[in-house]
Image (cartoon, rainbow, N blue to C red; front, side, top):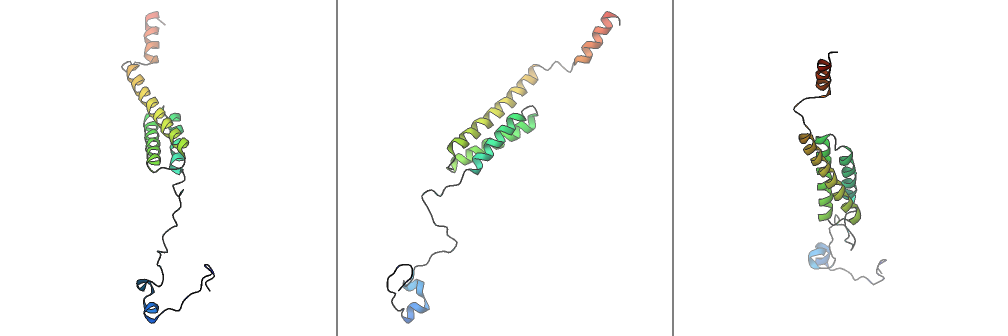
Length: 136
């Protein structure tokens, strides 16, 4: 009797002993195959990385290259997490939103930097012109 099935085993013929898989005596399974379960989806690591990169992108929005890089990487991780159907739906949505906010802040910083750029004149130039006009 087999220990797993509690069914009697029959004796194999000589042909089945020589080639048990092709004769149909035993069923062959690839030992590297993982068992497939209904809920065998990725765990949500990319979604968590997306949230972390989105928060870091918001914090680093003042440094435009770093904010752009972190926001873009977070957005890509969130989208890949969504495509892979990871379990963490709320986490990946939060990561996508935070990364998009980081990129929007970087864009606003770029626009405000160009709008408020006064041609290279800084506060020291204003101070020196004030000194010369007052006669100090």
